[in-house]
Amino acid sequence: MAESMVVSGLVSKRAEVAGQIASFKTEIIRLQGALSHLDGSIKLFAPEFDLRTVKAKRTNKRNQYFAKGEAQRMVLDAMREAGKPLNSREITDRLLKRKGIASSAELIARIQKNVIAVLHRQDGQLLEQVENNDEHGAMKWVII
Image (cartoon, rainbow, N blue to C red):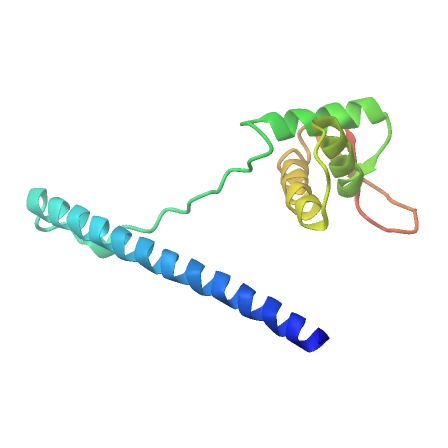
C-alpha cells in the first residue's frame, strides 16, 4: 500500500518536472529566434562585426521578499537594534520576523543567502567580522 503512494507521488513529480522541461524548451526556442533576428540586424548595420566577441550577460533573479535596497537596510537595522554581534542566521530570523513571513527551510536558506551577500558587500565599509567563541562557530558580524 505504502509503495503505491510513494510511486504515485514520484510519478506526479516526474510529470511536473517533464512539464517544466517542455516549457523551458519552448522558451529556449523563442529566445533563439529572437537572438537570430538580433544577429541579423547587427550584421545589416555592421557586416564586419564579430558576434563571437559579445559575451552573454548574466541575469539576476530578484528576490520577491525585498524591494531594491531593502535587504541591506533591514540587515543594518537589525544589527543596530541588537547591539551585539550577530551571525547570518540570527539576522535572517530577525528579518523574517520583521517582515511577518512564515519560515520554511527553503525560505530561510534563500533569505540567508541574501543576508550573507549584504554582509560580504559591506565588509570593511559598514561591517566587520568578529571573533566567535560560541558552540556553533558561525561567523559573527558587528557594525563598525
